[in-house]
Length: 140
Image (tube, rainbow, N blue to C red; front, side, top):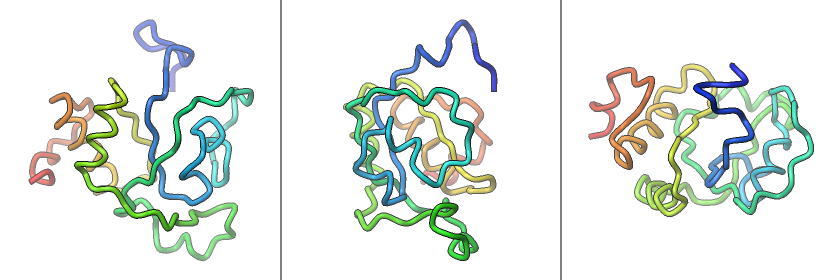
């Protein structure tokens, strides 16, 4: 990853909505949830004030691999018991939040989990950067 892209830096980003499937993150402020296990990224800015954005339940789809159940809780997902939202509910949240960019951070090869946000981004704005081209077929 690059620290600056087209003049934008991390400090220019304002999180306006967040989704996850882990019970330790869902229902918490996103600035606290990002440091909650499981977290395999480098913590490069640990002092974040509360954002006021609560992590909502996302779609499970294929974002949680079956083999992960064999890992200790601090290295795997603990699925939230919150009901999964419909695509229409996710679209409503993103529209109401004023989201302009959709960032999707998921395990490799999570095809439905990767493509679902892409379809939602297209519905909202008509644009998806990095589209594999097959999203159109999945969105019907």
